[in-house]
Structure formats: C-alpha cells, structure tokens
Length: 383
Ligand code: B12
Ligand code: SF4
Ligand code: SF4
Image 1 (spheres, rainbow, N blue to C red):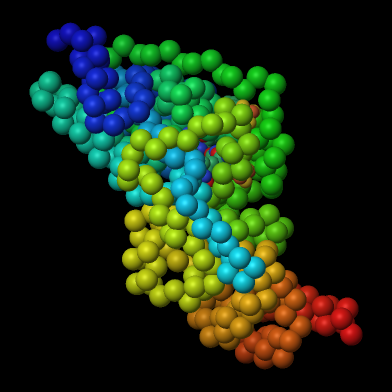
Image 2 (cartoon, rainbow, N blue to C red):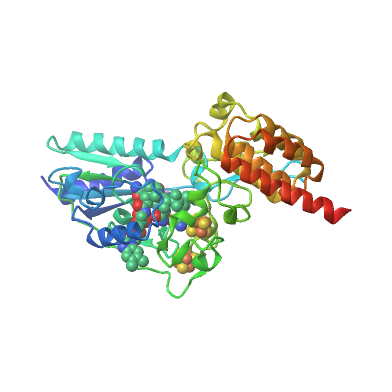
C-alpha cells in the first residue's frame, strides 16, 4: 500500500467534502502537554470540562491500540454577522460567542470525520480509527499544532495563517503510518494584545490561562457568578471572543464557507427580557441546535439578568421582581435581587424585604441583602 499516495487522496477528498484545512501528525505521546496539564492541574487553573485522565489525554495509544498517526482537521467559521439587530434602551440584547453561531459545530465536524473514516475504510480493509471533536480525550489544539494546522497563540488559540483563529478543530487517530506534517512558525512575536485586553486577567501570561477566571468558562457555570466578574461579563450570554477580536491575525478574517454555520441573528443576539420568562420548550426550540445551549437554560437566564443590570435597564424591574418572588431556583432569585439593587430599584425595597424574609436559601439571602443595600443607597442619595 502506497501511504504517500493515500495521504494525497485523503487530502483531496477532505477538501471535496468541505474540510478547510487538514494536517497529519505522529501519534507519539504528547510529552510537553503532559507536563503542562500537570502544572495547570496543580495550580487549579483547569475548567473542569476537560478529561480528567492525563495519561489518556496525552497517549493516543491508550485510545487506539497501535496508533500510528493523527489526522487533524479545521473548519473556518464566520466572524461577522449579516443584519445584526441592534438593541435599544428599553429592549436590550445579549450575545453568544462566534463559536456558538449556526448549527452546533460538534455535529458538523463529526459528520466530516465520519465521511473521512468511510472513505479510508473503502481504501483499506485493515484500517482502524477513532475520531473526536472537543469532547474527546485528546487536546484538539495540541494535535492541530503538531499537525501544522496553526500555531498556538498567546491567547491560547490555534491560529491558522489562512483563517485566523476562527476555526473549529477535530481529529482522527489511525493505525496508518501517514507521513507527519511540520508545525508552523509562531507569529505572535512581541505582540501581547490579547493578554493586555482580557477583562478578567484570565491570561496569566501568553499561552497560560486560568480557566476559572475566563469569561468563556464563567458564562457556563450554573451557580452564582462571583461578584467580581459580574461587571465584566457585560452582555455576554455564552462564551467570550475578546482575546480573538483584538488579535491582529484575525483582522479581515471572516469566512462564510459553510451555510450551516451562518448565525440566526435573533438566536445569537437575542432580546434579553423575553429570556427571563422563556419556557423549557421554547428554549429548546429556539436555542437547542446551537452549541451555546449545552448547559441548559439556567446559566443563560442568569447571564441575561446580569446583562440587564449591566445596562441598568429600568424597564426590566417588574420582571426581575417577579423572578425574585416566584422563581423556584435560588440562583435566579438571588441574581434578580442583586440586579434590582444594581439597576437602582429604590421602589422595590419592600419587595426585597419581603423576599428576604421568605428566602430559605443562604446564598440567595446574601444576594438579597446586597440588592437591598444598593436599592436603599439609591433611595437615600435621591432624597
Ligand atoms: C476546556 C476547554 C475550554 C476551557 C479552558 C480553555 C483553555 N484555554 O484551556 C474554557 C471553557 C475556558 C474554554 C474557552 C474557550 N474555548 Co474551549 N475547549 C476546551 C477543551 C475541551 C479542552 C482544552 C484543554 O484541554 N485545555 C488545557 C490546556 C492546558 O491545553 P490546550 O489549550 O488544549 O493545549 C495547548 C496548551 O497545552 C499549550 N501548551 C502545551 N505545553 C505548553 C508549554 C508552555 C510553556 C506554554 C506557554 C503552552 C503550552 O499548547 C497546546 C496547544 O495549543 C477544548 C477541546 C479539546 N478536547 O481539546 C476546547 C477548545 C480548546 N475550545 C475552543 C474554543 C473555540 C473556545 C473559545 C474561543 C470559545 C469562546 N469564544 O468562548 C474560548 C477561548 C478561551 C481561551 N482563550 O482559550 C476550540 C479552540 C479552537 C482554536 N482555534 O484554538 C477547542 C479546540 C474546541 C474545538 N474542538 O474546536 N475552552
Ligand atoms: S475568552 Fe475572554 S476572558 Fe477568556 S481569556 Fe479570552 S478575553 Fe479573557
Ligand atoms: S493578539 Fe497578538 S499575542 Fe495575542 S494571539 Fe494575537 S498575535 Fe498573538
């Protein structure tokens, strides 16, 4: 079997089926990544969404016995939305990050990898493969870096010369000894813009993230958002693009190569107030197909409340008061109380007092106290 010829055929087929970039890497153990993961774990800088087993994360042989190579793929996604709706003073909108625009990318990339697997199986009977996108054990970025897809930027993203960092990544481990490609040159140089701009200081230094401080992570948590971050998340409902939008390597990069990745503006830049009372069914219908809904409705609703507080939208006060009184979830009641205070709901001190007396959850109770304090301050500063 001519492996060099097969590699060329795989590259051609990949482009035919809409894979924007493909690279080949050895299946050797990822030694430096291993050390990195141990350090990150010791510093408690991980998000908790990663696979826990570092051996599995760094040794492809444990995932596919006799692994000989890894095929890395990248698909470019758009960075600009056509016809983006604008929020108004009384009808504010939130935003989902670009990696959540269009159909959930996990499905899109898995479909491409399945086609590639089928193609390889037709060519060679003895082929064995294992494919993954995001949720697999391997580090998609470490694989992409080794396969020459892009370099590992100071913002942690894999940056391709062609599409910038706006690419999704996936890979297939195989038992075929494909010739590996060479990693490409790191072009960050003396630039440090991403580290400087990060709103929460989550980028400790170029290439090192404390995920627990990263807004992309914080928007996905289900509990109370620590107060220090509430003023930082702005109107972000899911994810954060700041360290990518600032990157000079992304300048002018906006690719619309996959119709299924086109965002529906009403979905990815939704009105905030209707989100406060959206039913489970409506949420699933409207947001179920995008990757940003994977944690369910609660974090999105909590973030919507924080976004309304960020805008100090007084027209949201009646709905926030209704959540405070009626919502069965302590996180929503407590965050609503805090938001009422933040917006300056001095007319709502009675409701806050009543809610405080009725509240059985300790954390929610503390948030009501914060809300009350802020609301009373507004009252006294006005009288
Ligand atoms: C956990 C996770 C998160 C966490 C933590 C992110 C992080 N930086 O670690 C949170 C929730 C914060 C997150 C956020 C985002 N994520 Co995310 N996430 C993952 C996931 C599941 C695992 C990442 C991981 O293991 N990180 C641990 C670190 C230590 O390793 P790593 O980044 O994978 O690998 C690099 C480092 O180890 C580094 N390294 C190794 N050794 C050394 C040594 C030194 C000295 C240095 C400096 C560096 C270094 O080089 C490796 C290659 O770049 C991957 C999917 C996957 N299975 O890999 C997606 C993935 C990384 N996420 C992705 C995306 C799109 C995002 C967001 C842009 C989404 C958004 N807009 O909000 C943000 C970006 C935030 C950021 N600046 O990184 C894409 C990245 C695509 C790309 N072009 O790089 C991935 C690959 C998903 C995918 N399949 O497309 N994510
Ligand atoms: S995604 Fe946002 S919060 Fe996270 S490192 Fe980048 S700029 Fe900072
Ligand atoms: S902003 Fe500058 S330092 Fe950060 S990833 Fe882009 S080029 Fe590299």
